[in-house]
Image 1 (tube, rainbow over the protein chains, first blue to last red):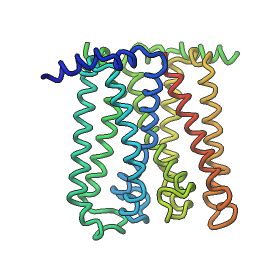
Image 2: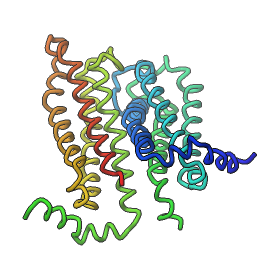
Image 3: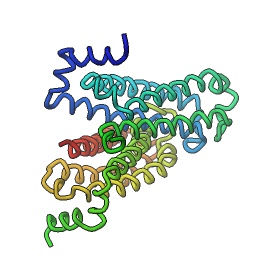
Image 4: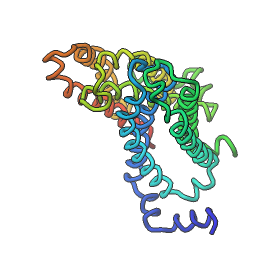
Length: 167
Length: 158
């Protein structure tokens, strides 16, 4: 079963049609998705800037992670759920959209970046917890994350404009 | 010159006509506006969460606010500049949208509140002023920014 045929089947389900045709629900979900930028990406930006030694340099990194990560995870969940609903409203159009594909690829890279950071540099956080400017690998993880999220936001914002760029 | 005439003049000025002739300029500026929004969210929420007793609750709010200040100001400047350009692209449409005027009013209140009352509470130290007013201040701050976001999203809808 190909990805396209799954999207094709998904687009025929009553829920997808209802969401697609709805007058307000789709716009509400879209609004929630955009508002998670403020909460989820916003707080993640602060964490990444701390990893880069740019802000909150007197706050231990483990404290920033420990106290802010729950908010980041909660915001991320809302973002993923609202994002999945947006996809569900229009699976075929999203499937064929190059910006959407780029966005999904970038999301995977962002996940890999987090995984690498937690399994390498963050394991030894006790050694650099209080450093105003963390070691290179932590700074790199923070910088890569910021660049990836900027690219994810850009790709997401461009999804409706595919025709302007590629047609 | 009435306000509507000013908006029409802005929208049909040669700069804006040139901007509209390029189909990708509006989404590019809107994207920069969104990137500013993410940074602004972090700078605002790190302090407001602290005032609510959540987030970095072991840190003094004044210190967090000092750390967040350049990000707050930087993102605000970016959002105001890109926001002005976005507004000019469709000035006359916005003139007739209630949501646009609510957004301007919320933004004005949010900025004034942040740099007056909120700053006062944040820098108060361990006083009764802070103990009493931290939570209400953070709630007002978050509500005002939420209103800016919501109305900002609304004016973009067809």
